[in-house]
Length: 83
Image: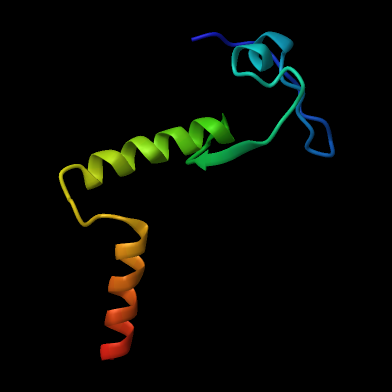
């Protein structure tokens, strides 16, 4: 793991080191997800968050032939109609 000293301005702005931006494909800037986990701040690219969500979804739905967004929504509609 690499680390570098950085400074947060009074307005809350943080400049990420160029080496770090390049390593994650943010040389030209871009959107990130900022997470707070206890007292730890994590910054991840949106594409990484999406990729991890897709991997988790694949694991959860693996082997379930009827697992799809359409089927999920249809099931929720059936449940709502029966209430």
